[in-house]
Length: 348
Ligand SMILES: Cc1ncc(C[n+]2csc(CCOP(=O)(O)OP(=O)(O)O)c2C)c(N)n1
Ligand SMILES: [Mg+2]
Image (cartoon, rainbow, N blue to C red; front, side, top):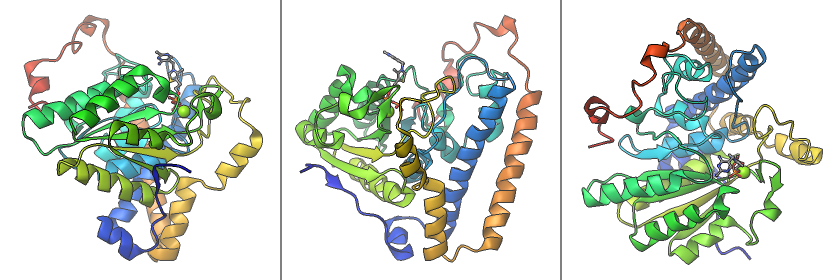
């Protein structure tokens, strides 16, 4: 028997309204998920066209998890999204053309062409770019939460990590410190069942990773990561609890990594049946059906939304393609933070 609580699905429009999302918010959530998937699908095309330097990573299958958590964050909160969490960047307001520019190593990407495609974040939007994965960003998120505590700011830090990353020592250190000091941190474990080619039964021996939360002195929750509303509700609860001084929560969000580790990996080691099973739970399809059944989502609304997303992405691609590669003379610029860079609400 798992120790962690297993989250229930959200049953009605009323329930999700009480949790904090009205109908317009729901359509916005759906839109963010479509934009997220659209960006990554176009990224594949750019890669095949030879326009993306290095490898290319996506979070297909993780759109609900990423967007659901980001919708639950407050404007002044911070987060450390990883390579499966494009939906976090999109939801926090990173413009799609800047993401395409980043993919192509251009000057207008968030890292101005200085780092690989998913190692990016806009600090003005409360996002901290990942140094690496495995789970180097958890101590950073806990450090941000400690700073909020010292400054007496009612802000929360959200730290993401993969189930493979959970095996490393820095995951333990971060959760232990957050638990001991009851810091305003929410840990999101994107459990997509694989760490490169390692399956989860070779990664950990407990029943769920969320079970570990109890050992750190806080709550653990397992949520279906293909259900955007359940993810949102659990993330919102955890974030507001942390903001009110209730300490951290570990949310384990269950999905399947629907593509290879990166574009160079065909994932031939993942059983085909597993992909078939999880394809039936596609998060976008699921949410669309929920909206139709529970929120009177019409064909007309859907067409309009799909059309506007397509236009945004096409325009974004053209705009990004006009962005130049960084000039070699600028190599040492923007490497260290300037006082202006630090003059944002997230650094005060
Ligand atoms: C110290 C270190 N070793 C290896 C890597 C390469 N690497 C990046 S992500 C990853 C797999 C991580 O698996 P998991 O935590 O489950 O995240 P997922 O990729 O499945 O989302 C590996 C091996 C790295 N970034 N850093
Ligand atoms: Mg994984």
